Length: 561
Ligand SMILES: Cc1cc2nc3c(=O)[nH]c(=O)nc-3n(C[C@H](O)[C@H](O)[C@H](O)COP(=O)(O)OP(=O)(O)OC[C@H]3O[C@@H](n4cnc5c(N)ncnc54)[C@H](O)[C@@H]3O)c2cc1C
Image (cartoon, rainbow, N blue to C red; front, side, top):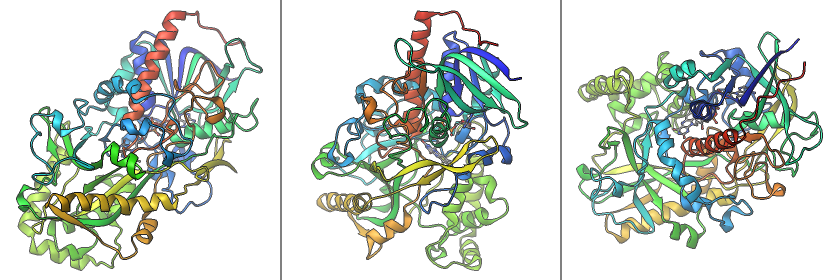
């Protein structure tokens, strides 16, 4: 006999989106059940529920990109907070028929509250807005034009939503966090009612096979990009191809980001004036400057949105000759390495494009023993021991004033980039997903074009130049195409039901009471990491639901026995 629960709003998934929505609604006085597949601690068996079928050469293993635990992937995220840009919301030829069904102005009012949830300070993402940062630039004397050097990323604590909001979750009288319960199916009512289709209830299961049914006035799927999509695919009782798949868009348009290290900048200005590291704003929040491209340049040149920032030389390649970088490399490959950073990040930083030996790294450390020891003490304290806000990372200065560049750009939406349910099933009986992350020649070509634009801008201003590190730049980019940490597109937002899965209010097209709060609803992927914008959309949804529920104040409907 299944346990039966009822509430005003059932939220599936206690990651950043689910926690923000659940607590916002509970604060507004509505009853919430927050359903979480994992527990408060990591459980490898539960984590395996999210494994995918088959092998996708461009896709990170889901175990490295997701966390089945209260707090979701915020247990392991970096904490970089960047909003999408107004141009992301514009119709552009390069994104084909992907259309945001709302304007940037409709989401902009939620950015400050998103900052508060992420604990990343004020919603000021341009150095020109901050008196303490104004008047300086990555390279002294740089004037913003086609290329801009004033854009800022902000850094969260990093906020582990499960830990930071644990007390609020425990103490909220109208929110019940139910851990160890995996939602396996959304069961819609047969046929449609006045105003649209409705959900009958949710089916959920615990690890030991106990079943629960949850009935609510509103249902929010906030299970992460891949898992939200999978849950819709798995709900086939009245929709054989999955809920929200009325027009065949469910699972399509899968986007990550295009990331590549193929260039190096050399500034011709005094090296000590380069701003290569994090800075702090007046509230002590870590921020970092990045090169971005003006909306006019993107429109005129048909460029995908992108950011480029300065990075360290590849730490695994001992030929950098830097004792600090070698020290970090040795720490990361040691048995302690997995305690310092998320495993996906550790693996990325310990891969070398050239042969390397531990002995060469030890030599670098021995030569730089003074700076390496000072670094270990200072960084170790600021990153691991200090309470509260942690330094997000470290960057070493270059005496030659030459820095490798990281390109982080929009992944264009492609129909042939998709996820689909496979025949393989997990321990709950849900079909595992198979991913097909696809990048096009246009994605690849945009990397060189963005570097060329930066090069032109620096040369015209007499401040330096960019050199490409490979003869075959496109080949080098192709080898680096890899993603899955930011999951967008697979439950696309659209104005018309025929063009996507959810509408501008994140309601599944045709449904009155079923919503998806996930970066998978984003029709385009921007240059920005997805979580910050997802929180903004989640708060907007919570406000809307709170308003609707307050207006109706309907008596909760009991589930038929
Ligand atoms: C290593 C790493 C670094 C990252 N760094 C950044 C960064 O710097 N900046 C940034 O913006 N983003 C970053 N991200 C991405 C960021 O973590 C995600 O965008 C964010 O966590 C998504 O939040 P979410 O609530 O949508 O989903 P998730 O965090 O995935 O949470 C979903 C929750 O739903 C639960 N769940 C899943 N299925 C079910 C089900 N059927 N029933 C019940 N519960 C379910 C899961 O257990 C999980 O707790 C990073 C990710 C990783 C892995």
